[in-house]
Length: 322
Length: 283
Image (cartoon, rainbow over all chains, first blue to last red):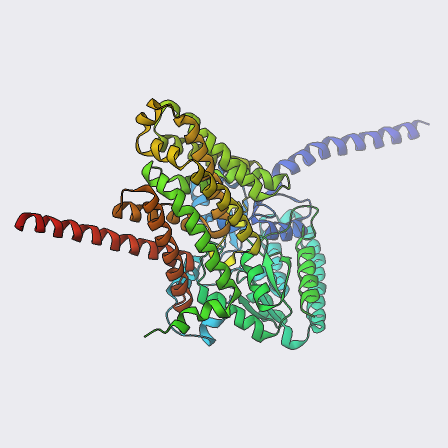
């Protein structure tokens, strides 16, 4: 009898002890959770997949917004000043970040994911090489304003796997206590990415080889083209600034669309689609639904995660071109 | 030497060139005509201002799933009424009123965007490009042209008098305030329609430079309008042709052609004055 009571007492004491230790600890854990900032929606989605619920994640440029024309607010500066880790794509995709980091006085470590990666140079319009060599100063200026290299790496899933590994390593280094979780989550996500990459490589076969040409408003699909065997071409080149194309260039693009024999060209959701409509009408091809280019779609849309966005793009491209 | 065939080739060969041509002819006619009043009333920046003040309308229309163009038109009309009200009975000069409404509405648009943390460039979604003009745009410009030019024609005496001599107009019993509101509303309609078809820079230039060119050459209003329209259309055709032939930006080419024609008119006037002065002295 006495032994039983003392046992119960022992258990109760242990429980109390656990609660006493665990409750403040979980509080402390919430306080000490790693504060992570992602510059834009796609990057934020990768981090969310690796970090699960182990970090406080803030995304600066939200879904459906254009990083090129983004204007940071004081709240963003506050977010940065509290952060432990800042993830960016680099290659001048976030031209506003340097100033924001400086003004916020943040001590956070900045991880530029494309650093050291072999990036594609901005070649500008594909036709600049093969159609005419004479001066096209304006297009050149636009490209150089955007940087030497193309930052739109996320359209090649095999590169994204590398970036996710970098995210994992950075999180593990900054927060060793949750290393196991990060490693597991990353492995899961990388497996899904591997599947997606394979799925794209295989489904592309549904499009006859001659029709694997991706003609878009802006030149954002160079990495997609390089990985999955598409030629890329665009109406406005690489900039999303208010572009004022020349009539001669549009005429050439129309000729190229006709010559390419593709059944459709593509608009995006950040610019006025009417120029592409005009080109499609004149060349006698369809204008496919807009692709996701530089941002995830808003929550509830067909592109509200990276995996969904890529599958949506794949489906749209195949339906339009096959 | 360029043959006539070379000149018309792009327009025969490409439908988009024909659409662009039609657009610059119609936008040129519309903007140059009403532009004469813009220049006479010293409101040269109304075009640029309206391009900014439509932002809150576009943003609200986007958030509520309405037509962006409609949002822009409503915001443009509100701006016009605001400018008219602020400058009524010469409380403020019109250019000051434009400055106030321009910054107020633009800031309102940015504030609305920041509440949604959505930094899609709304203006790029709505604002057009002369090479991307659709048949729908052409119809719209046609309808707006009929309304605006028709009103200007019907009330041309009244508009002319209040623009040249507002005091005299008041004396003979014209309601200058009402006419000013009417003109501002017509302007808002013109600018918003033109911007969504051919973009901001081209609209602003078409509103000011041809009319300014014409004002160098004549003082009579109907003739001024006619010259302005001819200048605008010529600049449109020349600019489009250069843009095609030499691969240069089309909007910029048309604006530059306008500027060159203005420069020629300026030169012509200066020479004529110098010559007539010379003639008067030595006769």
